[in-house]
Each structure stands twice: as C-alpha cells, then as structure tokens.
Length: 82
Image 1 (cartoon, rainbow, N blue to C red):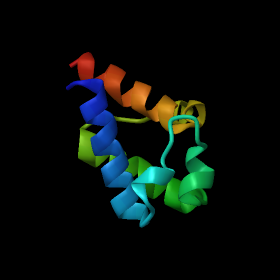
Image 2 (cartoon, rainbow, N blue to C red):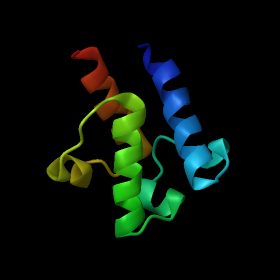
Image 3 (cartoon, rainbow, N blue to C red):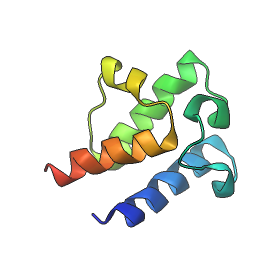
C-alpha cells in the first residue's frame, strides 16, 4: 500500500474512533497527548490498529511509537514486509 494512502487511512480510523478532527493529527504530534490516551485507551488504540491494518504490535514496540510519524512508519514497514 502506498504510504500516503496508508497515512490517510490511519488518520481517518483514529479520528473517527477518538472523535477528533483529522487536522489535529500531525506526523510530529505525540499520540497520547493528541488522542488524550490513558493506559486503558492506549490498549484500545493498539487493538484498533491491529484489527484495522492486520498488524501485530508488541508491548515493547508500542513504547517506541511516540508520534504519529512513528506509527505511520511502523505500519508501513509491516505492510511492505508482507
């Protein structure tokens, strides 16, 4: 999947689920702050991403994913490795 198409889809899924404007999702923005995630909603976000994009995210990996740009890169790498 082309990366820009993937980014658009990720943004749409997250904006819809967390009821925020897509325009607030920026590559350098912190995911937890932008989506106002606590530890429980972070688990929900991981489950949503795994389900929507058919990828597996380990606990050690989610710690490394701080920004939306990190998330885009992570999912893109997993999807292109298939």
